[in-house]
Amino acid sequence: MTVPDVRAGSPGAGLPLRVLVDQPEIPGNTGNMIRLAAVTGFELHIAGPTLFEFSDAKLRRAGLDYHDLAVLTMHENLEAAYAALAPQRIFAFTGEASTRHTAVTYQEGDVLLFGRESTGLDDHVKNDPRVTDKVRIPMLPGRRSLNLANSVSIAVYEAWRQHGFPGAV
Image (cartoon, helix red, strand yellow):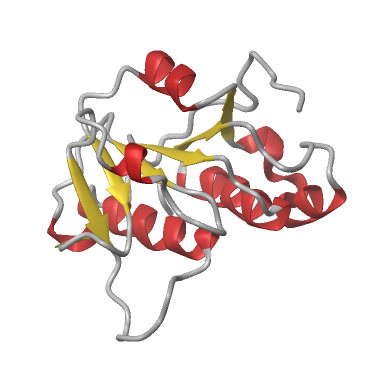
């Protein structure tokens, strides 16, 4: 994987939060998250390794022409992302949590942490002492999970709503 060492795009006036995705596997989901970052203004951070190249056609198709409008930073791994972000608060999204995503009062600089599509966050990541809280998005019983890009969208829009949708028209 080629890991760019510069950001694409410019910071938006939208959401003062950062989303960190650990080892995403599906290029289309990542493309959708890039588009979401562009339209809401949050920073998208990807911790590698990924199972795809950022030149992948599916990623480009999903992100369309939004890549230059999003703040996207690639990190070699999760530890490198933590070092670069130096977060005060990290919210790990997992179906195993008891705190609902709507119960968190999101603050500027928070990191919303999501795992890969096939397995979610690894146990050692969820239980890392740097994680402020484990958070879940409610679902009907007996369902395994939501799509990663949909989960990120739900969390981002709740946080953006709490801040009054700054920068939105």
